[in-house]
Every structure is written in C-alpha cells, then in structure tokens.
Length: 337
Image (cartoon, rainbow, N blue to C red):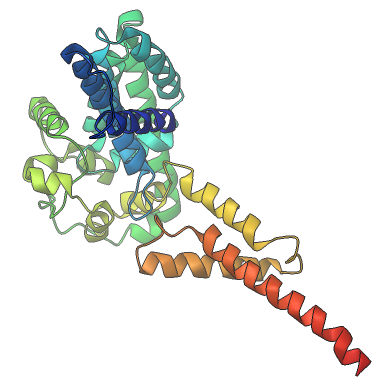
C-alpha cells in the first residue's frame, strides 16, 4: 500500500516538473485543476512519509506502525468526500490490514512511552472511526482493545516467568519517570490528542506491580513537543531498566522487530550476488562473514540506506572474474614452456 502510494507521488512530481519546464509549450490548466493536483499531492504525501519512516534501519520501526496508520486514516477521512473513487479502495486495503494487525505491532506501540497502553487504545479507537468500522459494528473497538490488552498481559506474563527470578532483586528507585530528552516522530495533532486523552483518565493510587505502574504512568505530560518529536526509545528503556526490568526485556525483543521487509529483502538480494555461478564453493560461514562485515562497515558510516551491497559486490565479482580469465589464459603458455 505504501509503495503504491509512493509511486503515485513520484508520478505527480514528474508531472509537476514537466509542466514547470520554462520553454515547454503546454496549455495552462485552470486554477481548479491545480488545486486538485495540490490536494492529491497532500493526500499522497502522508503515504510517502510513512513509507520512508517505516523503512528506516537506524531506529526501531515496529513501535511506529500504529501512529503512522492513525495519520494515514485521518488524512483519508479528511479527503474521502473529495476523492471517493481513490480513497474508497485505499480504505478497503487499510481495513484489511488493520483487522489483521499482529499483536507484536500493538504491543510494541504500547512500549513506546509516548503512547503507553492508553495511547494504543486511543489510536485503535480513532483508526476504527476513520475507517468506518465503528459504524457497522458498535462493539468492534471494545473487542480490539480487549484483544490488545490480553496480548500485552499474556506477553508480560511470559517474560515474567522467564526473567522474574533474575529481576526480583531489582527495586525501583523512582515512583515516577522523569521527562525524556527526546520524542517520537508524530504530528502536533497526535501530541495534543494523546495529552488530552491522558488528562481524561482518572489516576488513583499507583499500582504496586511493574505492569500496573507502567500503565498508570503519564510520561507524555512531562514532554515538550521537541522531546515528543525526538524520543530515543531505546535510550529511554536503557535508563529505566532498573525501574521496569521485565518490560525492558520485552522492549529489547519487540522493538527490534522491523516494520518493513526492506532490510531483509535486501539481505536476500545481496546473498544472491555473493553466491554466484562463479562463486559456488563459498562455505556458509564465508557467506555470512562477507554480508555481515559489509553491513557492519556501512552501519558505522551510516550509509546502509544509500550504499546498496549489490553494486559494490558486482564490481568486485567482475574484477575477480577478469583475474580468473587472465590466469586461465596464462596457464597454457606456462605449460608449453
């Protein structure tokens, strides 16, 4: 869905560039047509932003899926009456994806401290409203919220059983979390929505359990909009590990899940370059070393997103092949001598 929208966005940009050519003789479009083009570009821009953000490789992306889905469905809801023939099929696709959203996405979103459990419930409710799911089923939101909470509680119990003994001696030194020095990549609209919903929730005595303390904490109220937009979620959990040891272990696993298949598909593509018809005797260890070493070097230079392994490996492969040909041509001469 995101990739299709990105292609449409690129097509519109090329169209704009063609119309803007200084010496091109093109019949000017009426102002109403230009307005339509600008509105379509605005609609598709949210898809481009989500595609770029969720395809990132330097930060956790699984915890961002739900917030990006909220921004997309909100934009579609705004433009639904203006472009029903385009927005309708988009909503149908998103409804299918939203209904099949795996628990790892909602649970990792809950481990994003600007959302927490209450924020996930808020986004589920708003996404369902924008997609019209609440109109056809009055109990849809309550079922999805219950499904999320059950999955989160069950997952916490699994980690508690596994790490509970090692974490039993770790006691929290803080009753409330301090403000973060960073924030999440979301809009001002989401920031205001989440803060408003947090104020509406009644806050009684802080529960004694780790899961209860985390769910009852309002971390967002202590953040500025700058901190909200630049949250280092991994750094946040590292500093709060003594306060929430079991949840920190969950965060290490869930936040490492990729929202996009871009990186994994690239890895498979690279392996096809490494293991070529002329390089079939590489051991599995050698293949792993070649791929991981190059990826590690690129990550140190922060060029993984712009330095594809395929091109460089292809050049190396061609060089090796040329050297092999030269050696094979030299062998008969040596034999005759």
